[in-house]
Length: 542
Image 1: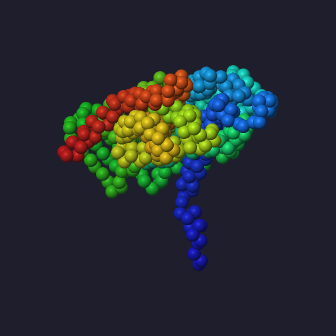
Image 2: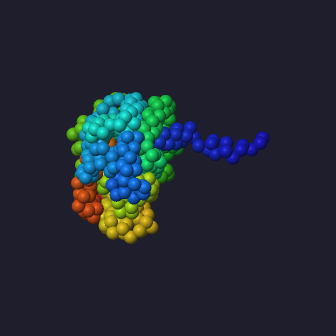
Image 3: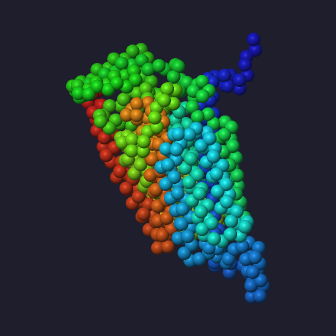
C-alpha cells in the first residue's frame, strides 16, 4: 500500500472538530479585522481634509495671473479650497476633525451597552450580517461626500454617528462566537493571537486609505465600505455560532481529557461544588486526591474568585451544554455588573482605550506635523504602531496564561507604558529612525492591556462560576466592558483635538495620566492576586 502524500497526512492528522475550530478562528478574525479596516481611513484622510496653506505657495508659476487661474481650476475640478476640503479648511480644523471622531466613538459607546443585550436575544449570524452590511453602507457614505461635492459638516457627522451605532454589532458577536468554540485552557495566548485582528485591520485600513488619499480621498472610504459589506455576506454564508450546530464537542479535545480529579481545599467554613471538583472550606489545611489523569487545563479559571483565594475547577466553561445555551434566561445589565471584577476591568479599559484610540485617530496627523511627511507616508508609517500592538497582545496573553494573573499582567504593562509615552514624545522629534523604534515599543505596551481585557478577561468574566453555566451572559459582559472602554475611546480623540493646539506635548501628558488612572483601578485586583499567590504558597508548604 502506497504511503499517503505529506499534504494528505497533514490534513488527516487533525480531527473534524479541530478543522472546524480553525475555520471559525480564521473567519471571526477576518470579520472583525474588516470592522477595524473601515475605522482607520478617517485618521489617514485628516491630512488631506486640511492642508497647510503654505504648500500651495511652493508651486512655481510664471505669473500672478496664471497662479489665480490655477487656483480657480483646482477649486472647480477638485472641490477643495486652498487649505483643504471645506468645512475643514478653517483655523479650527482640529476641533472639527475631533468632532468627527467624537461623533463615531460616542455613538459606539452608547450603542455598545444596548448591543450586547440585543445580541443575546438574536441569532449571532443574522445580527452580525445586518451590522456589517449597514457599516459598509455608512462607511462608503462618508466617501460619497467627495464625489457629490458635499461640504456640510452635519453630513459627515451623521455618517459617523450611524456608522458608530451599527459597528457595535461586531464585538459582542465575535467574542461570543469564539468563546463558544474555545475553552479556557491557554485562553490568553489563543485570544492574544486572535485579537491581532484589530492591528491587522488597522494596518490594512491604513494602506488602503493611503493609496487613494492624495488623489481621490473618497475612495479611501468607499473601498473599505465595500470590503466590510462583502465580509457581511461571507458571515451570512459561513458563520457557525455554536459547536453543537455541527455536532462538534463543546471544548477542544474534551473527548480525550475528561476531568478526573477529586480535590479538597480546606481553608475556611464554606463548601463549594463546581462540576467534578469539590472545594470545602473549614480549617487551614490542604488535602489533594488525584487520580491517574492530570488536571485538565481547559477547566481552569484564571481569574481569582472574589470571595476566596482559590483557583476553582469549574465545568462552566465558555461553551455550555445545549440545555444551558437555550434554556437559561439572559442575564440582566445589573446582574452582569455584580460579577466580581467587571466594574474594575471596565473602568481600567476606559482609560486604556482612551490612549489606544487617541493613537488610532491622531497618530498620522502627529507624524505629518512632526516629521513633515505627506498624508500617504504618514499613514504608512503609523502602521508600525499596530505592528507593535500585535506582539503586545500576544505577549500579554502568553504572560497572563503562564502566571495565571490577568490583572497583574495588565498592571505591569500599564506601568511601563506611561514612561514610554514620555520617551516617545521626546525621541520622535529626533528623527525618523527613533520614531520607528518608539512606535513599535509604544504599540506593544499600549495595546497589550487593551487586547487582554477585551478578549481573555471578558471571556473569563462572562463565564464566571457565579453564572452557573449561563453562557448567554458572555455577550452582555463583553458589551459592558467594551462599552465602558468606548467611552474612553470617545473622550481621547476629543481631548486630543482640544489640547493639541496648545502643543503635542500636552497631549502626551494627558495620555500618561490616563495610563496612571487605568493602573489605579486595577490595584485592588492586583493586590488580591498577589495575596492569593502567597496563600497558595503557604498551603503547598503544609
